[in-house]
Amino acid sequence: PSDEAADVLARRVAAALGLDAPGYAGDATLLRLSWWQRKTASVSPQLLRFCHVRDGQFDLPTVAKLKTYDVVVATCGCSGLLLAAGLRGHFTHVLVDEAAQAMEPEALVPASLAATRTRLAFFGDPHQLG
Image (cartoon, rainbow, N blue to C red; front, side):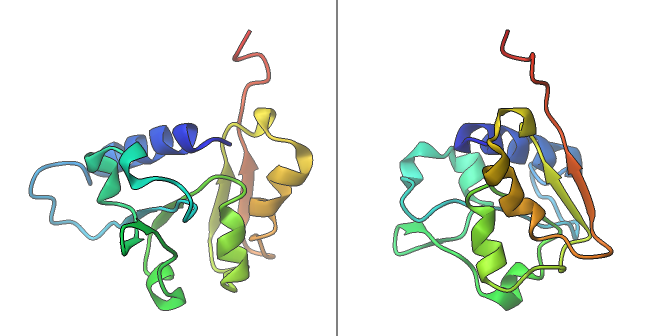
């Protein structure tokens, strides 16, 4: 549920989709959504290109723009921005990684984005850290 874990996931998704390849010309799009309070300097330049930054800080794209992304990676808490933007039921899949490390109320934030036809999955190993 941390920014660092979400960053790792976003980098792996970008690599799996080939988005990190030089001269990528495909159609897949990725957004790494971050809280506005996070410092942009804490994000690598390779990952920063998948973030929405305005006036030097992280920002939420317009709802119309949010709907164009194929993949949105966010922390559990930050996914609440998607809910506030009215995107409940928009996503075909909601995947919660590191769910075993999240508190139940925290994990319910991204789960609340799901609608009747949304596939919802929780991943995580409760014994991963020892």
